[in-house]
Every structure is written in C-alpha cells, then in structure tokens.
Image (cartoon, rainbow, N blue to C red; front, side, top):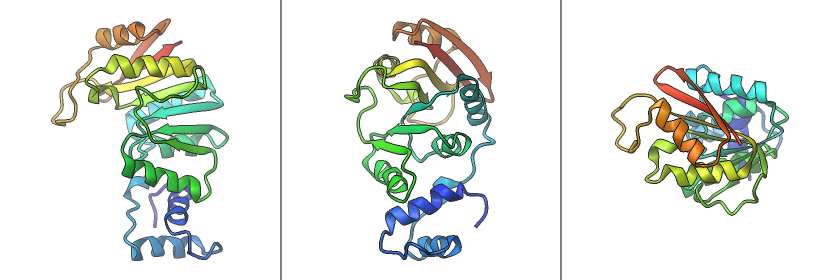
Length: 211
C-alpha cells in the first residue's frame, strides 16, 4: 500500500494486533490490518499540506530535542513530525480516549520515542519547562477558553510554543474561535510569551511564541 507513513502504520498494526507473528513482513501486516478492520487512513501522507510544511520548516530552524504536541488527534501533524525528525522525542496530548488509544498503539508497536498522555491539554499535570517546544496546531479555535490552553503550553515549554489556527471563517461547527493576527498575538502574550512572530500560509496563521 502506497501513500502511507509506513513505519507508523506498521507499528500501529503491531500495537493493535499483538498476537500477530513478530516477523511478519510489511505487506502481511497491512493485509492483516484490512482483514481485522483496522483503518490506516490516519497514516496517509500529509507533509505537503502547507501548514504542516511550514511548521516542520520552523522546527528545523529551532532544533528541539523534546517536543509536546497538544491535541494530536489522528496524527495529521504527528506522523510527518516523527518522519522529519527521527531523533526527536515526542509526547502527544489527546483528550479523546479512542484517539489516544490509537496513538498509544503506535508506541506499543515499536515507536518508543513517542509517548501519549490522555488528558485535558489545559491541565496536563506535567512539570513546567519539560519540553523544548510545545506545538498546538488546529487546537485553539476549538477552545471555549483558549487562553487557558495557551498558558499551559507556555508553562510547559522551555523555549518556544508554535500554534496554528484558521485565518478565515470556515464551515466547521467545532471551530468556535476566529483569530486575527493581532488577537492571536495578544492571546499568546497574555498567556506569558515574551514575543510572538506570526506568518500566513493557505487559510491559516502560524505563530511562533518565545517563552
């Protein structure tokens, strides 16, 4: 099967189907996924999405060793991140239990530099300054109180927080906040950032906040 982040798809299958023979080759594992009703669409290649490409580019300039990804969801950003930075240790935060279990299966299947925490991203309970960089991509627009999540992201980061949000209205009913450049930068500064630099990509804004 082409068009997948194959190492992570394979790890997911191994994590979800631990009784499969450990030496099964990739085609056999992917066939087993289909036979067992596992959906691999979450591992489709997404590195060419403009917002993903822009964030990956920004991170290459920052060079983190540890990263916390807030609201990892189905992994639209997580898989290209792990693919682009093979030595990076990543912790993902996901509040949805089903999605968290799918992400945890990837770790169980062999990607041990990935850790998943199932919790509210605005109240993680993790230690301050635990990560070089925190990313919150396509998350703030879902929050009734985005400043709470932004404050937690700033608290957890020792260097930078990267956020992305839609730059114009859309038809997603779960998007309950719409930011301008000024309001996004004001939010991050209210949350404790010392400086914020915002750029635009297709239909999105990306802010890099220095802690």
